[in-house]
Length: 543
Image (cartoon, rainbow, N blue to C red; front, top):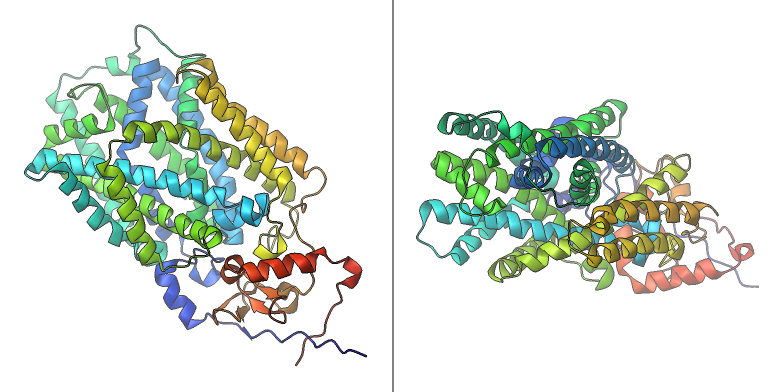
């Protein structure tokens, strides 16, 4: 008679592993759940996240929309965007704080361990694009004011000082750095408004400005709203930042309503937008309005003070761009190529990519690509919201399953919902120019189709992506958030919430990052899940 050996005991502690804490100073738990001991308060969360409120993009996009459909319709579109952005990001930020997961980890619940890789890849690409664009704005401002160096050298200067700013991560550096610069951005925003008012002949005509011909399909305010839908990558970005927030009621309320929700978008979209419209219709620019010409106009108006305002604005937003590009590229590489490098190495790689793109004449192609990538973000948001609504009563402490060895490689039902909505949206974008009815409705249609598809996908049960396997470490500890379990591969201890048992190594404990990077573990986990439930014998744990 063969005796089955018992499960090896878990090595459990109720304090942080010092090696993990040291690593987290730069890695920010990018491939792990953020433990409650690493969370930050609302003030620090505000400092880190509100870096995204200071991009010149928000001023210029509002002005371009106003020049296209008129100031009144632009403001209505902005107000509608504030409501929708605020409501969605309230829900996403609360969930991210409760689960401590990244977009990459959560997307496995939706689309499976392999299918979910498209979400972090999308963020990495879009964040890289914005790092290129916003960095180019700083370089052009420097060249315009100082002259001398070729623009390629100013690009290099911007990249060289931007990359080190993300070495410290959210908790260690970004919250403090961006929080310190925020008052200077607000002062600069006020200064450029007052300066323009005193310098130029200002009337109230900018509030009633309307083009002679409105060449868009549908109501102007609706077209304006769909333009702002093009930046729904912020929904994913919210998730990757909000995971650091505390999950208690007070912090959840403050962060949900102010840091990530309506308060943030009142400032970011509405206040920035109205000031942007005023500035664009007041300060003359050389040639058509763009982010570049608008920045040059500010520097010409205010001199060194305008340059400092632009530097503060664009440096703050680029810390977020480089951070998001770095963390998500790191997650994609770990899954696709099984390549694990330190955060600093990935920051340097992103910096090199950004600089190469800056040197190439591809901005028009990148802008077109961004329009198509925005469809991915909109359809992902639709699937995520439906998923959260359908699973809100299940496993409130742990959330839906996402661990690599306990979800299918691809959850084809949900993935199809995402793919169909995305595909139809991209086809509609490609049919005609940006002002056609198909382009106007592409993103809303993609959202609705993906939402309906995800609802249908979940109608047979919210756990269709899960693999049924025995021997779950979550059931072997007293508190999945407080207990730290040591991984047999990396020898580091992480919260039990993310731990699994490795059937390829005598069911020793394994962390989420090592599990995702190990093809041997994944094959063994799938074989174990393929066995009939009757064969899933509960083995005793040895003493």
